[in-house]
Amino acid sequence: MADCKQTPLLREDVDGIATLTLNRGDKFNALSGNLMTRMQAELDSIAEDRSVRVVIIAGAGTAFCAGHDLGEMRANPSSKAMQRLFQQCSKMMVSLTRIPQPVIASVHGMATAAGCQLVAQCDLAIASEHATFATSGINVGLFCSTPMVAVTRNLPRKQAMELLMTGDFIDADTAHQYGLVNRVVPTNLLSDAVNQLAANLARKSPVSIARGKALFYRQIEAGIEAAYEDAAKVITENMQDKDTRAGIEAFIEKRPMPVWEDR
Image (cartoon, rainbow, N blue to C red; front, side, top):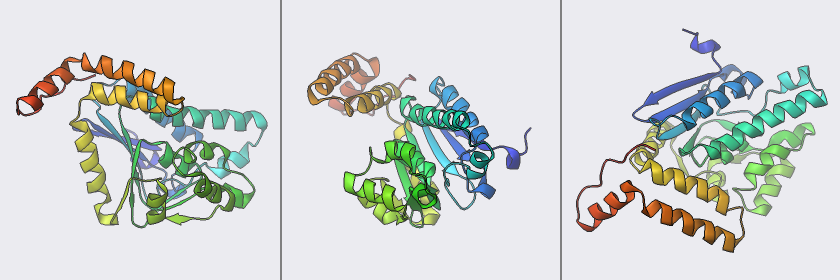
């Protein structure tokens, strides 16, 4: 068995909840190529795993994620290497939205640059009261272009622009106010709050969650008429699901909800 200290990504499955822990604590969980390769492999596996209902992304050590590994980038700064690196990262980020399970970021410590992107890309996020956030690339002369894609899909324009152009850190309460995270909790309650949300989601119909998540990301980028057309099609299909019909019958008849079938 591999030494946990040498493994850049850890996975633990409990009661249908898969927790992926960035495990480069000595590097503030910076996204090395190896770490992103491992993450991509796990996300691809989870997408096909009917036993997994919810995914949690967490970080080991004192930080959630400090963005890309600048030392690794400096070692090979060629255009081809950089294009490969950012394409790899973009694929991983998009995979978070494309897998059928909800993904929750459990954020403690700092989440900077691509780490802030990772928080923004997850479906949901809970932060500890001491978490901090920044798209700080501009401070070393590098505009956070790829993190901007996820951040601007979470934050209002003016707040996003300030974050991107100043590189300044914001605290957890400001991140909540801006819409980057769902809620802020005391640091010692972070794990409990994330697990409670994950357990809540794990009890929902995985078929309906998967349909709804896919629709959410399609319709939010579409015009309103196309969005309604797509939504009407999806909710019609959803009504035909055996789970849905059983759930509606249980609600009307005031019986406990059924045990949902896997996807």
